Image (cartoon, rainbow, N blue to C red; front, side, top):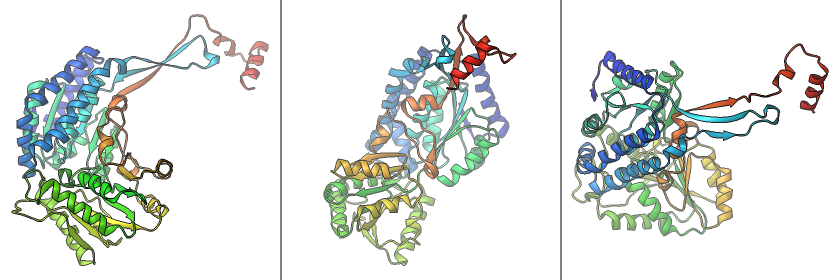
Length: 470
């Protein structure tokens, strides 16, 4: 079902159809949920070329191989992981019953919430639609998905493919601009998941609050990479460089800036440049992605221009080559100052500020003085120091001695903290996010609860109360 540029009544009708369908089938069994996940996997496997072409067209250019590796592969892995475990996730969880309430029994039952809304950004339009959809379907829900207007080719394709694979009262895709997004986030969903910027996340949360709709916000912020004293600079540069140049830096958990021991800046830049040229040759490489749309490209250029005007040194990592369109060569930015926008805003592109520190404590303090990030990257061979750093900082997730990879571990929750987001999904935490975790106490036929009923003051009851309050 393609709900492109819908008037409010049609969008409301699509929501109402899913709500009615959920009322008719409030607890789909494990077989039905697995079948839905199977249809989703088949959709991806049978349409890989079309998906790659649509995303490439929206970006201006993105390698089909990169799309297969960073979007299609992790989407299929998430489906496989959930499919194999959904029956176990659905089983009621036995819980401890307090001594005074025996022989009663306690359990938690996992029931579908109902209708889940998902708002998808433009940077990973497939993976960031499929991830929440997998969790919501595994939990037995109906799902409405709002695609970004900045990815019109993929949005139209995804709407058609979902419409061919699923009944509209199970999964539907919504297309349209900011007006549709505003109406979408105002619907009385049973849960709403938004992935995008912090400013827009505040707007979405405010709209959801009018309906008391619970939200999961996957935002972003400035995710730091800390290179500890003694760690090999070449290794750090290669792993940070790969995380930063993948998708041309347009990744919510891309390393936003690097903290490294003072005096190693030039060695780091040289190693980054050597590695980037080994990967791509120049910025015109067909393996290097374009900036996805003109407004974002203009914003990134403005960040560089302002930083340069205030004294920053910009070190290009790749020659431009026969560059065209919205391709932007990755750069390292040195001598940044706090008044520069590039040091304040999430960059979300191929610009990497490097900030020297004198002692590791200074690097930790720098991170802790700022908003809690979505991701933290620690490069250190000393295990005790790594553990200390993890204890002394906060972030949504961490990868040690590499970048990005924690998001691909399907058995771990993914999400932010504070301004970088709230709530978790992926794996069992995703199933629980999209489930009503219903507490059930089963009273035994023979029990002693009547001893404590009024009228109070009975000798046996008084003795029992004294024992309870010991």
